[in-house]
Length: 305
Image 1: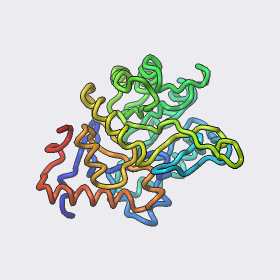
Image 2: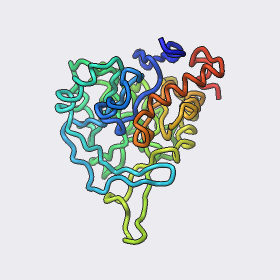
Image 3: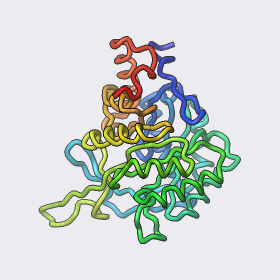
């Protein structure tokens, strides 16, 4: 048994994870590409790229742009749909001793319900992560996650049609993140994931146009970490359900910040693009920190700020 490994065990909504390091949705695919660089068995869990009821084509390119200390993306949640994921990707993930978390997305309440139902009776999924940053086409494109009433409504609807624990991924593009978190909890959320990307924009000054074809995109990476830590801290003080913290985590020390702010687990996103071994490196960084600081169990430091 590796040093410190057993001390890192956590539990979220009754699901036991060997350690708190997860891959963030949209940055790790379904793990196939990264399996050439790391042992997926080392990870606490894999949060797969967003899955919708039917295939989504995504946005027009260019869809990614590098920024100082981060990146912008406007992929548009391109994916082949739930049926293809269940038939092609899930069998691969079942080979590994790690938890599988499926990120669900939709443009209407009905689409969220439909994709959740697609997984009824499907073996190999441990948890759902509900992506409520999708634009609600019934409300003129406003994201579900920016309105507390809509949040409670969509969480309740999805929760009613699945027996799997449900984590809700929160958008930071709101005035009061605590109110949104509390609405998700009231709707039946078993856990929260935060934060999703901040809305940003980059201009090509020589061609006098936005760099991204969709004009704006989601900002991720180290640039957003202080915002993410702050929001995790605020929400952890006001809800009673576990939090998966994310947003600019590049090192074990970054992950520890989120844990001390109140997170139960962390998800690594943009760092995977910079270094394919980032998840395992961060896990080892956490183990080293615990050894050096003589910390025997995560509970000693969780939420101590």
